[in-house]
Amino acid sequence: MALKVSPLTKIISLSGFLALGFLLVILSCALFHNYYPLFDILIFLLAPIPNSLFSKHNAESHDFMNESSNNVQDVGHFFTGMLVTSGLALPTVFYHCQLINHYSCIMSTTGGVIIYLSIVVFSWFFNTGWEDDEDGLFGY
Amino acid sequence: MESNGDRLFRLPFKLPNSATARSIGVYISGGLYAVGAWLFLDAVIYSKKANASSVHVTFVDWIPFLCSTLGMIIVNSIEKNRLIQDALASGSFSGSSSMAWQARLVLFLGFALLAGGLSGSIVVLIIKFLIKDFTTYPTLGMGVNNVVGNFCVVLSCVILWIAQNVEDEYSYSLTL
Image (cartoon, each protein chain N blue to C red):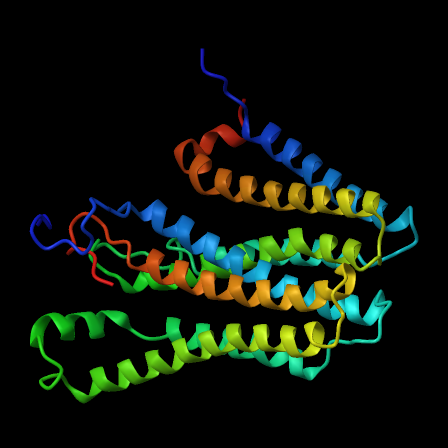
């Protein structure tokens, strides 16, 4: 018996997850009156953008022997990897320089990773799931 | 087309040849570059905000990191297939075109900048920290972060080069 989750449930749970991530980061700032971790949200929101800008969905080609699209896609992968690691490293650097305390560091890192994961899972569902059953969105 | 008699290494050493291995290599390279950059920025921010000693991070400390980054950009902007195909086709240095010479020169310049950045950071560590007897840990951390950060940038460049040479099954064998 395959587990069939309707797309509406997926959207609602993903947006709840995203809100949880935002809540964690904003709490980590507000509880300690120190607004430096907000930069972490900015980095994790910027992180999926290079991947989607340079991806192969944007540059469809029907021959499989072209190398140039690989190079363009590599640029997107490089910058996305760089931004995700920056988002993980930023709270650690702030903690090491004694600008925030360790609760704030852990909470903002966790919240940022949750935000990024929910964006990635949403774009994965959007690219693969809906093309199969387009009628499943409104009738379940 | 198998590479039985003309392998590069003596031990059977094969890089994985799939598209996901290539993209994982590029992600790791991007991550390593960010680790190197943030290690260096950690030293800069620590010097400004939480520094208890009299030595500070000045513009001199930025120079090795800028050299390494510039070298990495130069090395990875060259179309390396042109160099490799030229080496395979002509077989000697005298018969290659001027484009190949330009590519070789720019590649040399890029690698020189990378190596210069790494050695420059070691020089800064020795002259600015070790000779003047700042050898205890939070202060020395500023200099060590600079060296390890530049080393991570060099590693990131190497992994990016290797990852971009991962070919799929229907292309030729690996030449570095």
